[in-house]
Length: 260
Image (cartoon, helix red, strand yellow):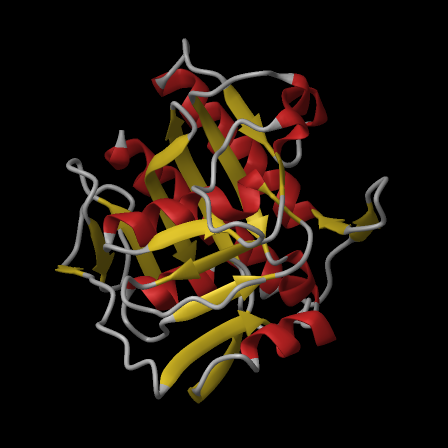
């Protein structure tokens, strides 16, 4: 499975970068007014074709194929071909390709590829998370390093928050912690920063969909981290109606979590 995921993500990332580095590209608005580009659509077509060929009997949910959103499933493939479209449009580089396998409501395998950042994270065949060093060949795995959450210092936490969706409620919640360093990042990279120990805590008090979070969630879980519901700290599940997420907290074990 992960060989297919990795190959599809790298090839989609290559196509995205061809469009990203062009002088201009088309940006359209979807029904919810969020942007979509030809890069989203090209990457979605490429990934979907590869996943359907490799896993013809598994349900596939992708951001760009609205018909897939009507399914009621607990085990499924889920794809965001270009997470962080706003970062892409503004040429800020913090966008990712996300592919995940959710089993019984839990994301157990995933790949997050940030082509403009040259960073590639994924779970291995046993579900443990690694980061691969570039350059990336879709046919041949390069040098990989196991990644692991760090042991946090609750008197000096490293926090990461959204670059494009930061609000007062998020800042108020972060203000409950003793913060030594605060980073902003786009897309699912925030999960990966917690997974590598570059951050301890990522709270999200805003709208997301399961395709935004599943792959990063899988990488974080494979590195020893957790994703929980914001309101009651219960486990964060997938396969919800319409694949819409509530607020959540991604964190390393040992963070002394504050109430909502």
